[in-house]
Image 1 (cartoon, helix red, strand yellow):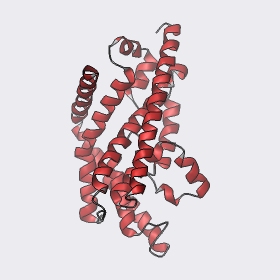
Image 2 (cartoon, helix red, strand yellow; image 1 turned 30 degrees about the horizontal axis):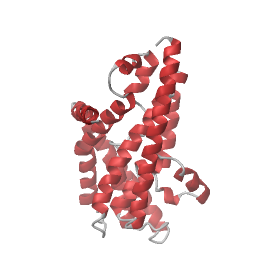
Image 3 (cartoon, one colour; image 1 turned 90 degrees about the vertical axis):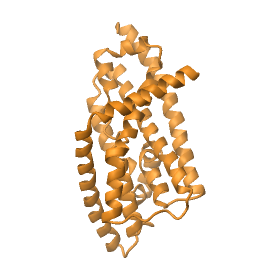
Image 4 (spheres, helix red, strand yellow; image 1 turned 45 degrees about the vertical axis):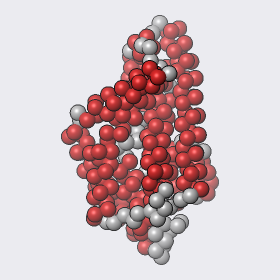
Length: 268
């Protein structure tokens, strides 16, 4: 168990270092995140003011916090569905991964989490800082929001990785998954609350969205760190995220075993 944990830790560090080589890409991501952050601020501020200063519990300060926290997380959560694993499954190179003494899902998630954690340094933190300095972002009143928010962000990144892993494993049966990745990119952003808070949605659509892991990737951490939910509400968000993590890991293990059997039958 200790050796397995050490291997996954080293894979996480490797993912962090690998992503650190793409510094210009990180700078481009920062510019894009900030630009779209200002656009979202303009649109959502206008909507709140048109509603009389408050919309579904969001005032100007709450909207600003939602926008800049969600934009800061955008580089660390995978909402586009693209992974190297999907290509390795398509080409059959994943057969080599099965020969290694490391669980394929665990290795993928550890590397993906390392990559995502690095993205906070050149993209996430500067984006949030610009939002605080230029627009203003109110701090949560409850000091517990900070440690709970940190746990929630880590869970969001990990749930994102385990969910994208499920998408990649579809390649064992479909071979080509680019169509699924496009569908995932469209659905995940909307359901995660990237374009607008999911609390703005009609009741029936909110119920559908809440039954998916996507709010755990963006909306719930934004709620906690903005102070929109605190105490029991924040803890419930974290528990829901942990539940989705367990569910997606279990589903990933089952799909990995099923996909490996199918790969062996095909001669991979």
